[in-house]
Structure formats: C-alpha cells, structure tokens
Length: 398
Ligand SMILES: *Cc1c(COP(=O)(O)O)cnc(C)c1O
Image (cartoon, rainbow, N blue to C red):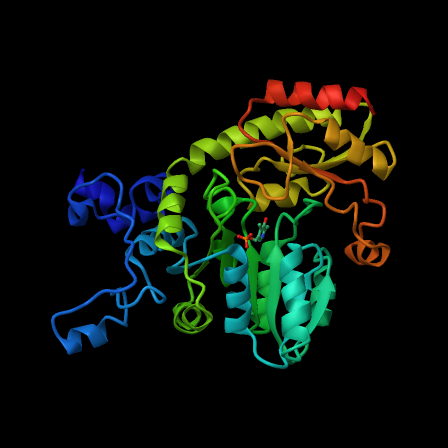
C-alpha cells in the first residue's frame, strides 16, 4: 500500500475515506480488512499506563471505546468533514445521546414536525414528561416562524432534511445562521443523504446523526448509529458522558460490518439513485398516480434549494394514488418484489403505507390530513425494469 494513500491529507476525499482512510494494516499483519477486536478489555504493564488509557485515542474498556468502532468513527468524521465521531448501538441511541448531551431539565427544543417518529416519542415521553423540557414543533419552511419560537431556554434545534415520508427539505444554511446568532445548537438526521450526498457540518450544523442500520450498513444486517461534529467539547461530553454512562456504544462486529458497508456505499448509492430516478419518472407519468415526492424530480417544488444543499438522491420516495387510502393498502399487497417492511437502505425493495393507521389528530399535527394513503417505497438493487414491471402490474389492478 502506498503510504501517501493512507495519509491524513487525503481524508477529505470521500472515496478514499470509504475505502482506506482510518485503517492501519501494518498494525494487523497487513490484512486488507481490519480485525474485529472482540475484546471488552485492554491491559497494560503498569498502573500509570492503564490510567492514561482512559484518555484520548487509547483503549481501556469496551464501553468507552473499541479499536474496530474507532476505525468506523475516523471514516465517518472524515466523510462528514467533522473532527470526531462516536458510534452507537442504534440510530436512536445516537439521537437520544445527542439530545441528552446538549439539553438539561427545563431546556426548550425546537423540532421539525416530520422528523423520524421515535425521536418525537423520545422528546415527548422522556424529555418533556420526565425532564420538564418543552418542545415546539414546526414545519421548518418559515424561517421567521423558527426565529419567533426561540426563547431564552431554547438549547437545541432538531432537523432532518429531506424529511421522513414527505421528502420536503428545509433551508439548512438559513436555519443554522439563526441558531448560531442565538447560540443555539443544531442537530440533523442525515441518514437519507448519507455523507456522500449532503455535508451538513459544512452548512453550519453542530452535530450530524446517521443511522448505520440503513445505507451505511447497506445489507439489512446491522443496527447502529453515529454522531459526528467539529465541536471537540461537545463530542467529549457525548463520548465520556452520554455514551459511556447510558452505555450505548456500537459492538465491534457491527462496527466491522459497517466498515464493510462503507467500502461499497458509493457504488450502491449510485445504483439506488438511478433505479429511483427511473421509477419516479415512471410513477409521475402514470395516470393513476396523483403525486410523487422524490428530491431527484425536476418537478419537486423545492428544486432550487435541493440543488443548493444536496448532491444526490437515494432510493427512497413516496407517492399517492388517485384513489382512497384502502386502495393504497391493496396496491402494496399486490407488489411481489417489494417486501412490506419498515426499514430501508438495504439491497431489497420495500413498500409501506406508513400513515394508514395514524390517528386523525396526529395526521393533522403532521400536516398530512390528506395523506393517509401515502405509499413509501425503497428502491433496492433488483433493477429498475423488474421493479417497474412489478409496480405496473399492481397499478393495473387499482
Ligand atoms: C431508521 C431511522 C432512524 C433510527 O435508526 P435505528 O438504528 O433504527 O435506531 C433514525 N432516523 C431515520 C431517518 C431512520 O430512517
């Protein structure tokens, strides 16, 4: 291996970060893949050395750090243009740890109302009910409305872009500028874009979250999450407080699988994107389809904003039929290549009607009162001709 290829100077190249950066083959017998450090403990010759091992990039105990997880963290920090990353046992462990590291009892949180559901459940049931925090949910499109919601207790703004289910985006630079002027931290769930298609830290966001259970793992075989930031003080608090004390570090085997997933992320995402582009165009042109929500479509109402902050689009989209919500359920049940399941980001295509069982009140709160029949699909790697044929035959029955 050419030494230059491994140097830190090249950590800003996405493809080198995915494939080589952060690895030190000379330390593991020149194996081309790093070992799974299945160890809970690192032991030292003398007590002073052991004491020091709890600091910096050394290893003491597996709930604080693990060498395999650390390789993943170095790659994720490089990919997101951050300084440090922390890997967690799930996306939710990462999300809840970020909130707990930034907020305290009595904090006020501003959160986009269409963010990933369990994050809102955590805020409503743990932060508000148990820790007396307050929360304001907004759709994020009106910047003045965000500024008006800020109060002296506001400590955190929680973003996601594109947003789950509806695939609208928010103006990340405008929101982080307002947050910074009030010294409020911003957090974004960047799972949809992956670090390859959107770099929120470069747009002023303080901490980025990724579920590695989705595209980063890429094969529907792991649960994990990661936080990345340029803020050393915040990351130190996340690693030594919320991660170590809640105990949610990623296991070494999952870290190894995530490193393997990263190696092919660029190749897989290009394929998911191309497939989804073809499918979105097919659906948009079909007379039985009312509306397609996909950030890659030229007809997306926020086209300009999308092009100013995203460099690509993944395999996830939603659409509505010109038919009542029950028909949407019958339609997805007719699909043969799309499994009915909730996750996404793996090799396999999936379909759901995620809002079908949502109560009227919650639908109104989400601004989705007319969207009960919304269909979300993940376009896997089965090839767009096969997937379009499957969609076409199910549409024939609508
Ligand atoms: C799946 C998902 C999460 C949660 O990740 P887990 O690893 O399941 O905890 C968070 N955000 C988004 C956008 C997701 O799709």
